Image 1: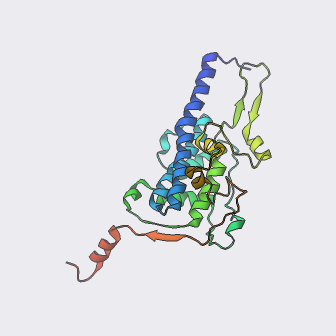
Image 2: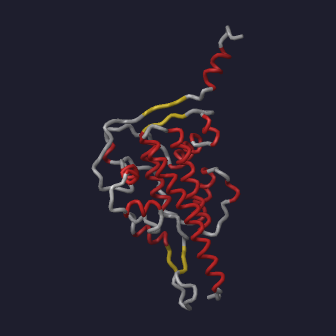
Length: 248
């Protein structure tokens, strides 16, 4: 085994900590806030923060596995495609309709189609409602499944546990996650873990757990009815005025 200096090991550990705090922790906060926005019928900002969360989780995977995330900007479609090339990550092949949603409309979308949907609706231009949006309850439930699956892979694919030991002890995280399909926790100090470890039933914890079947599969609550809606861009009516034959 090639000798690894103390300095090299310290830098590597420091880099992992920076990625955890700058990407995973902020992505957790974006995701928690996105859920709150959806449940309070503020879908425009829901899409905006959902796109942010997905972007940061995917960039964390690249960075933790020695890849650069510099050239992608906010393109979560390209980020997802590149992440698939990094290693054998345990990403879902498709979304699964939760059993408690048997009476709720469920629109079938592939993972790629959903990420494209979030990319379009969460585009930075849409902060100003340039395109408008349409939504349904599916958007929230699919985001929960996607975040649960991607977030658990925010680790080095293969990690050397003790670089100073002559007998290399290498941990294959993807192999572990395959063998333990319900394991998702990362670090006790990450926002989601800290939130769920709280003994008190705070408002923030309530919002995070509400209808969140991947992170809280034991819950029995189900939505009373489906949630649908749309909002056109404010520019639409002006285009309609201009198309009117009697327009000046």
